[in-house]
Amino acid sequence: NADTALYKAKEAGRNRILYFNYEMKEAFEKQLMLEQGLRDAIKFNHFTLVFQPQYNLKTARTESLEALLRWHHPEWGMISPAEFIPVAEKSGNILVIGDWVLETAIREIKEIHHQYPYVTSVAINVSALQLREMDFIHRLKTLLKKYQVHPSLIEIEITESLFIDGGEELLQTLAKIQKMGVSIALDDFGTGYSSLNYLRILPINRVKIDQSFVQQMENDTRVQAIVKSVIDLSHNLGFIIVAEGVETKKQLNLLSSMETDVIQGFYYSKPLNKGQLQKFLDNDVTS
Ligand code: C2E
Ligand code: MG
Ligand code: MG
Ligand code: MG
Image (tube, rainbow, N blue to C red; front, side, top):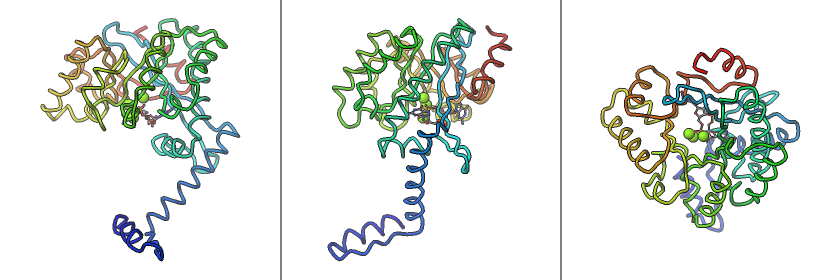
């Protein structure tokens, strides 16, 4: 397997022979293909944004959206962000791509909010590299000014993995962003390196419970207890709770009984393109 191959390669030292196995070669070639593909995608504008409605259970309205990136390759078809975002982060392309996402989301929320005034925010996923490498705050301010968008219409989604390799500077950046009036959401909470300490130190407005918890809660009372505790804890800290990946009525009912503020998931709506979103909001009986 791959571990053995790497071990042998290390052991071999100067005269090493690399025991690439088939999967490693495949993965490597795929990575290169994706990297080249991403450069073309930037050049030829193969990216689009879709928007997933978030439903506020307390106000019974679609008050917010999450912007999600889509890459449509002319030959390969749709490629999932779960697959290409990590490649873009590794190759540095995420800076150009992330900037495109930021500008496009800001431009679009202006239009959407104008047409549907009860939709009052769009959440934008931002990677650590963007926050670190770009003059992110300056760029954000420039774009808000360019499109005459109020900061409260924007939410930045971050994950805890952001802080794994040191975070004092990032914390300050986030605090400044929040001070501008842009809100901050902690995405995928409960996975990876989740620590209660993040809830203590991060400047955030919302906590998004990861979809793996939501999907396991139906048949697992232990998961239910964890979710309930995360909701209560977040509320005690003054954060709004968003549950991600809600797919069934039963999940919705459980989350609702636990005082979840906002739900997002296929049960309510899939991510939608501009035209679909307009249809959805036009027919939205809740609004
Ligand atoms: P995320 O930010 O946690 O986004 C939620 C993901 O869950 C989205 O996948 C969404 O389509 C999916 N989802 C929503 N409701 C349901 C549901 O009910 N069931 C299931 N099974 N899935 C649901 P998507 O669009 O494939 O994005 C995957 C990840 O890629 C995102 O996870 C985010 O981490 C990253 N990503 C997407 N767009 C961007 C972007 O513009 N910039 C950055 N840096 N990352 C992005
Ligand atoms: Mg997200
Ligand atoms: Mg998430
Ligand atoms: Mg995720």
